[in-house]
Length: 242
Image (cartoon, rainbow, N blue to C red; front, side, top):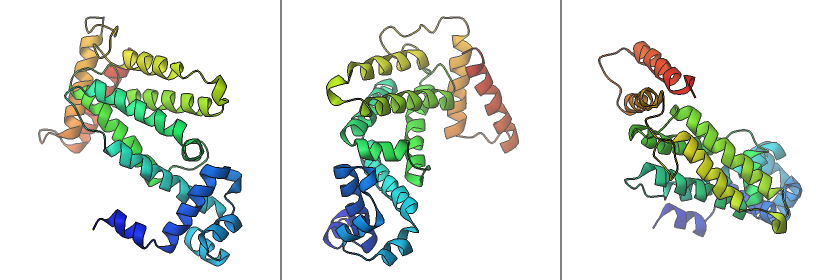
């Protein structure tokens, strides 16, 4: 029997509270997630909520982490193919679909809460996907810079669409933004992407690929300090002419 089945059959008090809070959040919005309403829905007294979460802010942060965990189940479920750029595109699509299908969670996760461990894990998943593009010699910028551009663009656009009435949403913007970002950060990665022969591209892509290789498999030929310095130099080569 799986852990998930066990939890479903006999949820802990904390699980029950989080499920009640998540249901209120998605059904009625953030303002409905009061300690009194959640306590009533979960069948617990206020002292139990305060003992487990501290206060309403702590409860909301826990709900955000709960939302991220369900997001990560989907994210980790993405199979890797032999085309890391295609995988990155699928990851983008999954991210925006999650945001538009669960807007209350998404807004709480990305606009209203301090970063939680699950959020940092989601960032690590994106970094891994971008690192695979780098290792294939197809990334124009450093992994960190490319990941910030991808995440910031997707997040900003999803939050903007969430704030727009559904009938007025231009969902084609998601595809336009995705392809423009991938065209910018990759080389020969999407139709119409920049060619690797443009001035400076050869040095940049080699710098990015070497940084990705050293990140996944550090060399014993250099000390930790030397590897950190080399990594800084490689990032400067990758991003300096961006």
